[in-house]
Image (cartoon, rainbow, N blue to C red; front, top):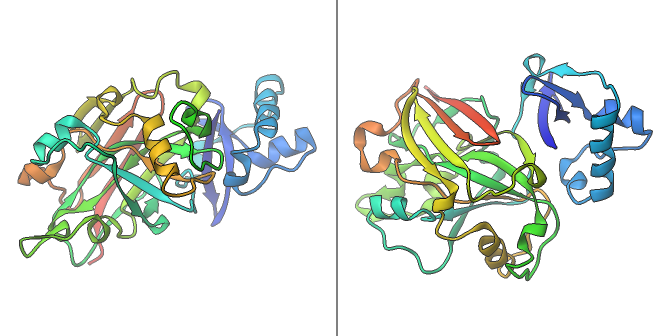
Length: 292
């Protein structure tokens, strides 16, 4: 199952992708099932029985399709309760920034206002100059998780999407001091996400997916999720012992080597187009534009 969030003339809804260019809107399936499907994706994710009915309808009933080109594709989730980002989770990335390999999971939060759709523009803040990209695999939590053991953690995963943890490096390191992740990563539009959510049953092994980031078609990051230091079950288990994970929460699992921070000429300039592609999911493509 692939869930795509979209809008038409300002009205947001979601549907189910049936091929690379068409989807079936939620309300079309409602008519077939004669059963209400929640407008809020977060309420659908933990409802296994309803999701199975939807999947069966998509496979067995000839449903009207809508071209993706006729709608605006929104972030897969417009209002998650939490966006949790894992730092320094690829060995080569830790090495390129001169950091020790972490012995414990390091994380930070981004507010939901950072989210934009897979093809929306990243807005360069007026107070920042050094804008960077970080292509990442993101996990979508499907059920409430608290004090979860790593052996059971994958049962709480609904699916996966593509994520770009955009960062203002000059605000991360300012006046010679480490200013942390909050200020540098929390600007509006600093979390391009999408293009849809791919359910876990369609990805056999999330720890064996190729991930590529291009800037203006030039490959900057070229890695595989197998290179994560901390794997997804351990991440979920660790976080669930600190905070309650809820349906629709997004966990960005870290970025591989190849960011612009260590190569000044790789930092983004106005007009640059960043594309993050992950095998079995798809690609997001976002242009950096100025507020001026």
